[in-house]
Amino acid sequence: MAKKKTAAPSKKADAAPKKAPAASASQVKQALEVGEGILRVAPTWVPRSFLTPGRRLKLAPQDIYALGAHRGGIDERWFSSTTAAANEGAPPDEGLSYVVLQNRRTFTLKDAIEVEGSRLIGAPLWNKYKRWPVYSKFFDNMGPIPHHMHQSNAQAALVKQQGKPESYYFPPQLNAIGNNFPYTFFGLEPGTTKQDIRRCLERWNEGDNGILNYSKAYRLQPGTGWLVPPCVLHAPGSLVTYEPQWGSDVFGMYQSMVEGRAVPWSLLVKDVPPDRHNDLDYLVNQLDWEGNVDPNFKDHHYLEPITASASDNYVDRWIVYGKVGGEELFSAKELTINPGASVTIKDNGAYGLIAVQGMGTIGKHALQTPAMIRYGELTEDEYFVSHESAREGVSYKNTGSEPLVTLRYFGPYTNPNAPNVGDHKKR
Image (tube, rainbow, N blue to C red; front, side):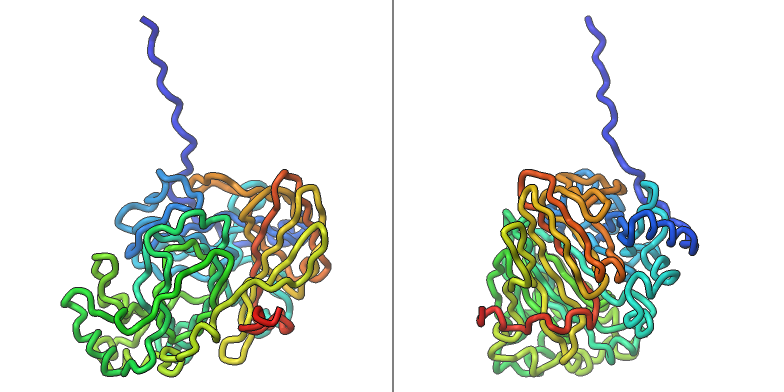
């Protein structure tokens, strides 16, 4: 009888990639010179213990719980991030993007920017913030996220953090299925009172506190998006979401139970001063009341793509735009290039890029959208383009047989001529 062969072990990355040493000036300069101003970035995976992964981020199924079930499933991938994830039990570099040099994770993008800030993100941003003050992510959940808000700068400063406005875009390439609840609750219904929400908080330990009774859900449509300022309640639905946002991870959960799972009080008050943890009036007053009960909420926050430039070979569209509190804090574009075509794109400043369809090149680098990624594996789908290179122009080429589609997001004050919310109705 022939001896039965043992299957070779699958290619499994090390459980947790080791933290890379801090960047030296020579390493950063080498990476910039070798990459001609474009840095290859390793995938950055982030778990959330209070959510159920939607399994559409191309992370191998056996690696969804690569960090252990106690940390939660991996349901987020962060892009060009210099912001650490505020997860209990997380290592200090969780959420930070790593630069790939000589085919290995070499140093964090955060360290690189501390060394070459003006060259990488431009003198105006470096002089004002001394960091890349934004990041983006995909988040992907089986069901909805609890109704929550992100604090304003003034509120977050009380716990030595920064506020967080954010935006959403739902890439069609990742949303062939909507999972359990492709609807998002935004704000509160007109006529809702602060006492109504205070009573919801009083009922926290009685099961579902009923806060969604005072909100309205909007059906999510792939290829559209939303702009969400701080202090506005929202319960994102189950579409894969591309989310350019401010570089902070502050939040407060106002819903006590979601899909039968209890939300701990600690997630409501994690970014609240300790002496206010049980102050229900303070917690209610964190909300931007006028913004939450806005009867024309969709008109003031809903986004549809707007063409920025196009030819027979490509189309470049705004997908995130608009101002928060009168300021342009972040923006994003979707570039689609036809098979066999090449295009050079000039932008006003640095950006983080992720490919969502197809294959080709960006500058001298390969650009390849993977079908499946092992945890810890290096890919060729994510890059950070320096301020200098973005302004000089980056050459893209589609070498495949299907459209090459990339998403890129920008920092504050980079695109002052971007559209305003509602401009899609004028086109």
